[in-house]
Length: 345
Ligand SMILES: *[C@@H]1O[C@H](CO)[C@@H](O)[C@H](O)[C@H]1NC(C)=O
Ligand SMILES: *[C@@H]1O[C@H](CO)[C@@H](O)[C@H](O)[C@H]1NC(C)=O
Ligand SMILES: CC(=O)N[C@H]1CO[C@H](CO)[C@@H](O)[C@@H]1O
Image (tube, rainbow, N blue to C red; front, top):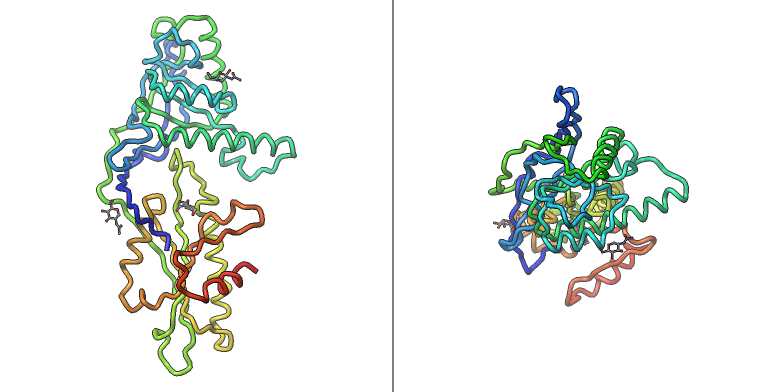
């Protein structure tokens, strides 16, 4: 089963709120309220692994907006820099984060094409190529952010007309060479959020299904069992934005289809197999398969011992037309290869 032996201690933090309102305030305006623009932002995850913090601990923000990290001469410790991912130089940002340069905060703007309104749209070939490149950049950026310990708040927002207008203004102001201050004007970015609290015991919910096999002379609980398992949750730099289509949406979709087909077969005694089928959707996948642990522990001994095969469906959508099968070591059961061959056809 997909339980990892080298258990790493994980700690989960409540992600404050999944969506937080960020207020851009045009500070030069007298009528402050008229000039405030409110947008939804998503905070970078924070978590501990074996006591080592990752992501960003900080949530509140109240600084002026800037549009560039390049100006090494200026002190950016009280500036929130707004960077569209479209324009990002990933090498530069990797160095910048690695050097732990002082910064008031970072607001990363995700391309419109990935916002929920645009997700279903199929573009032309050019557009798809652009999307593919952009996706690779996002994957790289995500890896970078979740493996770093960042000493300032990091937020994500989708580009839209409102944000683009604000950013254009901020860029114009930056071009004058005057840093944005209360006297010179410019935008201020404000997020009021409570201190994130560590979750003492996160809720882990598993879902299970059971199709009893057919035993001619009596009790189906005497039959061997095949377990089909997928973890259903996902992980991402901004938890509220993770789609998890392949981690593990693909595994979950396959599990549902297998359950649907076998429940048709098992509804007729003529096509009911000599195996019990156990289906498990487990939570806590990114949390060291904590849900799978919990689920296994919940079985009584007889059920656990009746399991002949366990098939874990994980990220099966990533390879074009190939499926990879990992067999547990050592292969003690001669039927395993036979069984897996069948499942591939
Ligand atoms: C990206 O940043 C790196 C490191 O700062 C720099 O060497 C490189 O020239 C930049 N690339 C572009 C296209 O600006
Ligand atoms: C799940 O994780 C928590 C926290 O690390 C740990 O105390 C607990 O034993 C784990 N549960 C299982 C079933 O592994
Ligand atoms: C959320 C989750 O458990 N994702 C897993 C999906 O499958 C891949 C490949 O086995 C794992 O690496 C992911 O952790």
